[in-house]
Length: 138
Image (cartoon, rainbow, N blue to C red):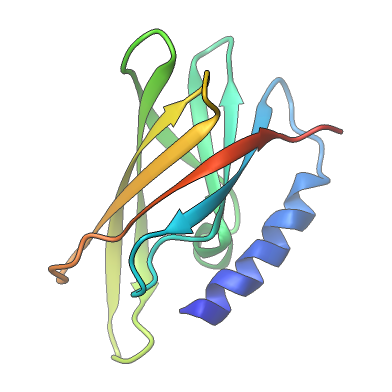
């Protein structure tokens, strides 16, 4: 699981160099509060302010999907949004099975923070993390 995260972070860094339309790229350094994986240490939020839409990209998404995933966006208040997305068929490193990850996050644009919580099908744990985001400058 950690190898996937590392490889994905490298791929995500390469993705940052690609041109993105009217999106602002927030590069979030996540402190993971659980040691069981499932939350990437680096998450990109590709925010389109004109449509109030977001895409999420991290190491797991890079390895499993290959491109950013659209997130469901709900405005929480004047400065924050609730984001949710799903990653299907995540391989479990110590079992011959795949699981789905249901992720939700609070993206606070005023404080530039991202708080993530995951629900992994078939597992009782609830991985979570929180971090600061920086706007990616070209």
